[in-house]
Image 1: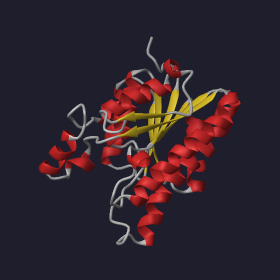
Image 2: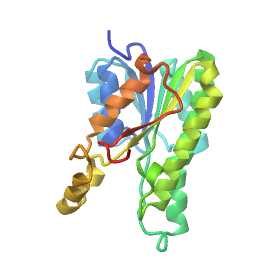
Image 3: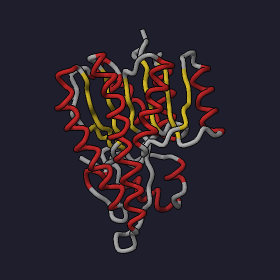
Length: 248
């Protein structure tokens, strides 16, 4: 028996990177996948095909997760197509890194809107479906910098810390209806974004991690499988660090 057989997951920002890794792992465990990205480009189509090849129902949706009305529209479309939503993975996010003294209002607003408001938008839209079902798992992608902060990332850290407070509040509100809400705080994960860092910077990062390596998107996806499945049926309101011991 596959861990997510018969379930349907909505994953935001899943055309590439960590979101794609989660979608693939979920499909391997028998989960049907509705995933969103800002635009349905080549990488989104490739991800959709990879999921279909794993024998599950899968569809990519163009959606601006930071737009309240657009989020409700896309969730309505997903429900018409899939009939249920058992897991929500709020993964969409951006960075606009710079020191506070150089940070513009626009850089602050955009990161908060895309990273934090999108979590409110999708949770709000999916909540009504999960309440009717009296079950569901909400998984929000935070970050170790949401816990410990990071120079040059005041906007990103604030958005990811906000996600943690939101996650815990939702866990308290919805627990009595069988809905769980947890956050994952990835550390230094090797993705397209971190691959752009100079080799010496990457090596320095890795030397500070007790497990002496950067994480992979699959490391994060494995924890997502745990949180989406019945293996974590008594886990809610928690922040699970996937960071190789970088934050303890």
